[in-house]
Amino acid sequence: MRPRVTVVIPVYNEGADIVRCLDRILREVLLPAEVLIVHDMPEDTTVPYAREVALRDPRVRPVLNTYGPGPANAIRFGIDAARAPVAVVTMADGCDDPRQIDELARLVDRGVVVAAASRYMPGGQQVGGPRFKRMASRWAGRTLRLLARVGTRDATNSFKAYDTDFVREVGIESRTGFEIGIELTAKATRLRRPVAEIPTIWLDRQLGESRFDVGRFLPSYLRWYFFAFGRRLTPEQLAARWAARRPAPAGSAPAPAPGVATDIDAAR
Image (cartoon, rainbow, N blue to C red; front, side, top):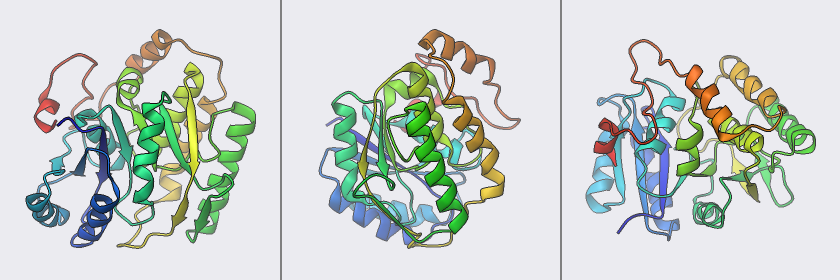
């Protein structure tokens, strides 16, 4: 049966902690699903534990990211490898509520291209986390919704569902951290595509140690923050802009162009 939702989990040396994460997801996701554990290297400590889970539940598939190191490339690879029409990106750290994966996926089924789990709408909450990061993300979410009308109060949250056809149409330019969430929200806004949100309660990392580096990732977040305020674009204009900026970093594979078969098919 073709899955209705692909859950994309970028990992980096999560070790045995991935088992708790997967157990929660497999218990709570009721839609036909596949769960991609996207790792950058065969020797990643996550891999043997993910394979053990995969032996007892065929929904789980560890896949090797060949687009280059880092979470942005892992997420790009996972969405390209998705066999479902909806991809939900969630973290391996226990911060996100897996019960909401089905709800986010159903919003995309209904026609939105980005469905966000929002910490900052009524009913949402953020528990813990660095103070500066909390303040910056809340400020960005409020101003983007009020001034750029992006359709969500939490554009920076990584816990989102995407229409995979939309993502393959507009492309992903991010290559460093977790700014893909704000990039695709900004692109949907510029194309006037629908974005929706549901409230979520986000808990500070429950498993392992955080590797989020605010100083390193902030410039990329700011780039997409300001991009959201531009004039309306057509798909052709956005595609031309993406094509002009697509050169891959040395040593990494470029993203496949829409409609072109590549080695990514082996991961689907």
